[in-house]
Image (cartoon, rainbow, N blue to C red; front, side, top):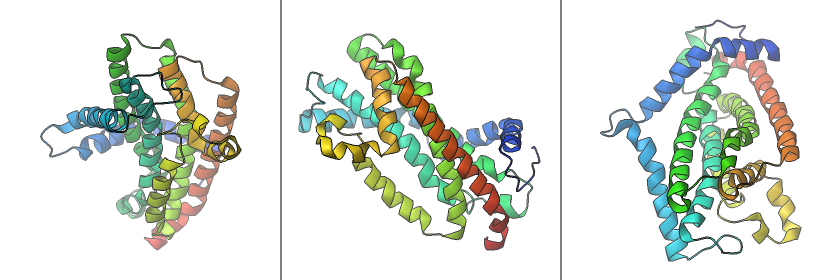
Length: 275
């Protein structure tokens, strides 16, 4: 375990310290993932079966029951489910991290009071666990896409690149919420409510083109909108990412991550007193 200056806000020192703690992050992420399924008969296989089950349900409900179609409606019912699922992979990664963030510190009081521990890595560990499930879900999506289309879009290689800005934004928000959740215990319930609303104002179940043009500006104010659309472009439509939009998103993500980490470090000295 690497001991770090507990309250420094020097971003370069913090990044270097987290890099030195990478083995600890990996080990705790593994424990986080395995612990979620500990005691179950199928164990880690649940992480594979869950997205398959959800994809099957989405295919039946939206394509068979509601006979929904995306955009012009040229796709078959399986393609519609894959389009839906691509958006959900992005949304679920974000929501899993921010919903857990307010309880990361209060759920690990022993790390605050008894051990010299780099608390700033806790959101990274939560992100690692969420990424594991996102990668499994992405694998399921690509497998079903191959079964439906007998091929893959070569642009799928850009999926990790497309996700990078969202990961930075999510980490920044996680650091902020992890700190804020120590001092205001209602944050966890508030965030759960907000993320439930966020699903219906994100283009997960509908294309942005279906929204009247005068209201689209509000959809694009949602940070998930650009990433969801770009993921569908590279996974489903075979289009290259919008590099200008990606660059802007990356800069915004880096700023949010930096601000969240600085806030976390400035407020962490009060954790022990509150807990």
